[in-house]
Image 1 (cartoon, rainbow, N blue to C red):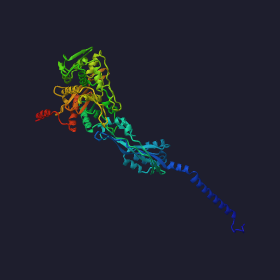
Image 2 (cartoon, helix red, strand yellow):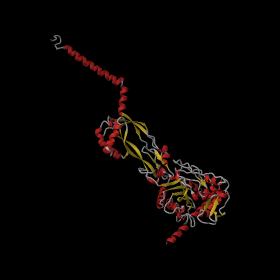
Image 3 (cartoon, helix red, strand yellow):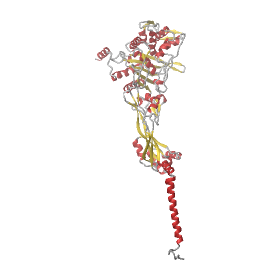
Image 4 (cartoon, one colour):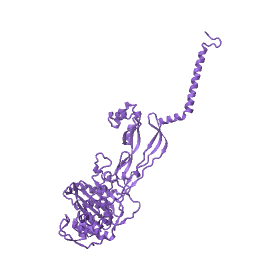
Length: 567
């Protein structure tokens, strides 16, 4: 039937269609208002949550440099690859490409992705070179990203390893001064807002939330030139004598600063794959040894300071043996009557023991203690040891006697070197420092300048003809020092054929600049005396150090004689 009023067939259908279209338009307008006005904040938040991310800005760790500014530890920029497993797990067809680029077995990578599929973060490879990382990122695999980090590098490698130490992969100090000064060296990471696309790739940096603050640099007292010399000298002698280990410490005679500190065995902090625990130890600070006859210089100092002897005092060491309670103390041979210089020159155990018996109660302990023994050097180095300095009563005559020539107490090599500093500077003991000092510190006067001078002259005879350390001699220079040879302690007491070879030295004797202590652990070449094994380390080191520091010869007569022999 046709409607004669409109001329259109079924006009009611048209009205229904138009009504539906109008209602749909109203719904769309309402929804737009709802989205753009009512729920605008919610939608913005949800959009940001999917596109905005906060990204950490890595902080540069402070450099460690030697006293002259030479780098010992630096942070090099590297890239770390990471993934969002939630995204990466949706593209299994790209896993094989990723595994190939990472040089990782495909099944291993696939297993890791599956195990972390619900997580938002997973490391793929830490600390890659920027070029290698860029090649992986260039594959365009969804959910794979790269971020900048820093990797610690040690230019001097094993030469400074025991002093500087190292960090872990996250840049946290693990050993040495890297650990001791971790809070000083580490920086504070920053934070920024970034915009990412639907594949998680950074499109744009939006806002800096927090500025990254780099760590502070650390200037050590170490002189890298002297460190190399000490390392070469020690390593050579340890190898030549088949020793188990060795250590050497060099101090500035006028400030107490550590100029060199080396150990054997050492390790390369840039590659620690096969490093043993024994190689990690900084023996110069953490290991304690009986110092042997190097203590005779302190015993003589105690006798002079307490006025029980003078440099001209004569002591009869005949017949080269001294019986105290159940023990016989012996010299290498019968030296007969010796003055105090002779006791040092010949290293007489009998003579040192007799001086200890003359001293007032507690005097020997007080002298040793005033020279820094039995006390923590307070360098702040991890694992630092104070040594052991027992207090013996006057009735403990044997213990006092053996202490006078270096048994029954323990010191670290650092303590031994420090104890010889007063002989090099008029009787002053300085605090030890492994960090370069900005200003001088006040020393402690432990002996009078006269006593320090007298003992220094006595120690000079040890390196001269007739002394026990002629192998420490350096043509053109007067040197001073004292040898020590110590039986090692085993399960059943002192071992008959195992030794520590010890030497403490001062150079040059006329105006001391350097003080050193060397300890060689268990040489197996057949020679074991301190003068034969440890003293040559000092001689080799000083020969180079005097040239490096431009210290002119103070023994021109000796130099002329040597040149005459050569000609």
